[in-house]
Amino acid sequence: MRRRRSTLHRRMVVGLVGLSLLIASLAGLGVWASDVWIEDAAVRDLMERELSYLIGPHAPAAPNRAYDALRFYAGERVPARLRDYKPGYYEDLRENDRSFNLLVRETEDGGNAYLLYDISFIEEREDALLWTGLIALLGVGVLSYFISLYLARRALAPLDRLVGQLGRLDPERRGERLVLDIDDSELSVIVDAINRYMGELDALVERERAFAAAASHELRTPIAVIQGAAETLALQGEKPALKRIERAVAMARHEIDALLALSRVRDTPRLESLDLQHVLHELADPYVAQMPGVRVTWDIPAPVRLAAAPGAIAAIFTNLLRNAVRAAPKGAVTVRVRADHFAIEDDGPGIAAAALPRIFEPGFSSRDGGTGMGLYIARTLAMRFGWRLTVENRDGGGVRGALYFAPQR
Image 1 (tube, rainbow, N blue to C red):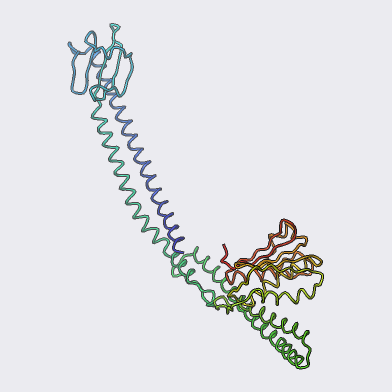
Image 2: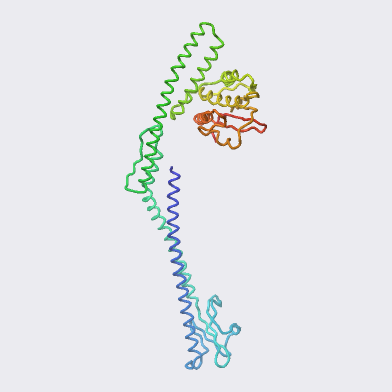
């Protein structure tokens, strides 16, 4: 939150400072251009009038003379460096580190008259004006920065407080709402919309939790009855059937615990040290028994122990295995277990390319009769415990589903 707020402040300050510098630059450029144009026009007008006087009927008897700024030449006393210039007006001629403007006119006797005007002092004035403008521009930049910083903080203070409230929201605390402490119509619309949305979310979460609690209560009762009946049958010697019942009861309890964990965001999951080879074999037995045509191959090079919630492992593994068995009713399924993941591969037809990006969407199913919730729940459980679940088509055909025991990237 802090980074976003700083970025917004910075953008606003940069925009205001940039606008101030642009306006100041355009104004300074206009002043400088006007000054240069006016001075150039004034100098040329002065030279035109002075040269007209010097070569006119009222000219002095000895016109070949030099003034402090003006230098007039005519006749034979014209310096050789000026003789190549034809009648016209020339600017910025350099001589002895000085700058001159030159005006050349044709006289009545067929010769040329030359008038040089030393403009070095004008250039010095223009340079001083330029440096003054640059210093003023720097001052405008510094002043506008502090003013913009103050204005940005003042203007964005309500938004900063609102962002701070959003950052402190806790999904486990119901009934929290945003409070706007100023009269701002634009922000009021945002706050009201967020508060309405938060109210709807609170109601939805309460309904979901009530449903999860009710479902848990209603399901645990028949499970307890089944377990009691199984124990009674055990006394009568019905061992094989009882084993399947006990495994089904344990699996149901694990899955209920895993699903309930999804509605308790802040509760710490109960972790157990699991022997994956033993646990996965037990979980796979009921599905393998139901599909005798499927060949299940186990690839477990070394024992793997994992600290995990049994219900989450059961829900994810059985979902992947159930999909693999259904995809290859007469084929082969391979279960591979490594230290950082387990994977289930089948040799079925695979998943259509159009359906593959949607397989984790709730309610989406690529086969008839599916609820579309299995992979969604499996991935949600994986995210809940910091794991990564992938399902992809294999190059040689079939599907590979894998659960990686590592944070998602």
